[in-house]
Length: 336
Image 1 (tube, rainbow, N blue to C red):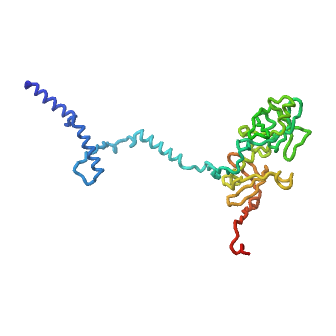
Image 2: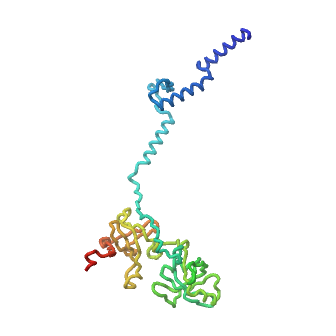
Image 3: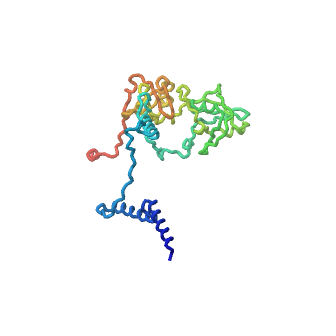
């Protein structure tokens, strides 16, 4: 048995600890948490059960003297949050001074038809045809190169890597072009010119004779310097296809898309006219736009073509008629 004084001290300690903890012993908190969890879960599962009383919510303290205070109603943090919210809303509202962004509609990307792909052609692998080797030119290993079009001259006159493809191979082998210049006394065929070129590794006439009949190609990675000026003729046909067409009078409205390019060399009368852009208008009709600087003012290969069309040019649009393919005769016509 403990002495009476120890029992008295123990009773005083228990009473004092209960007063300090708000008359709730510390070992009962877990039981209260379990009762609160069970009450919430049962109330959500079955609203008809009300046997478990809900615990009182925490009371929010309010300043009853706030109406009589001379300080502003919002504290500094709340005022800063309100100011930032107002600025964000002002940024979202469109301004009348800013120009609207142009809405450029493009056709969906179509994969090429597998039946039209030639696996033996270097153009399938990203090469562009420039011309072919005519013959050897001198004892130092120079070659005569006949270009296919006038566009090839800008690539032949610049030193760099060109692909040489023999007639019995399907893929060109790249060789460094050291120098290229025009042959003044010799003229090429239709739309082409003759150049004198020197390649690395070809130093004698006997070596140059071995490259007779080779085709000359350029890789698309080198063909990146494309000018937007029409006078320089530095725009590839493949970069014009599917470009949207705009008018300078309304630069944000799409008139149509470029379907193909008709070269002046392919027309019936040679030496007359200019290259034409075959444009399919929004309404479904096709129109031919002369590809000259007086009409096609701006050409950007990644954005579109802007034209200053004369009056009545777009009215000449025609609707292409598709040929009707007769797959079979009707019964009455077959008997006749």
